[in-house]
Length: 69
Image 1 (cartoon, rainbow, N blue to C red):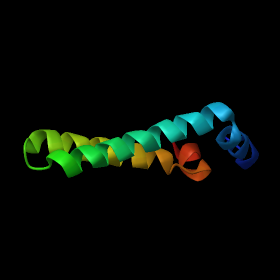
Image 2: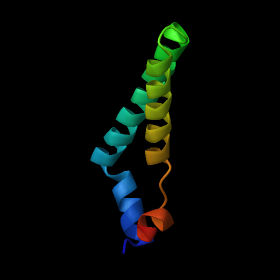
Image 3: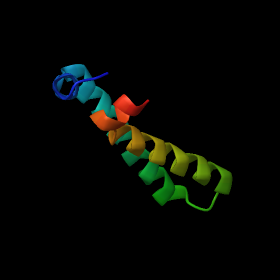
């Protein structure tokens, strides 16, 4: 079980911060790809939308959700 204090320490760790920044960068890159090429390759569009959703979900985990797993 992860305590709230452990979770806060983890979220403030420089490596964790860098990880979340990289995830956000991937979201922004995906949005740019869709803005530039949407409709050209519908299957690729779906792939990019799925990746954006996955990164966003990863960035929204809470300590309660982590303890449920």
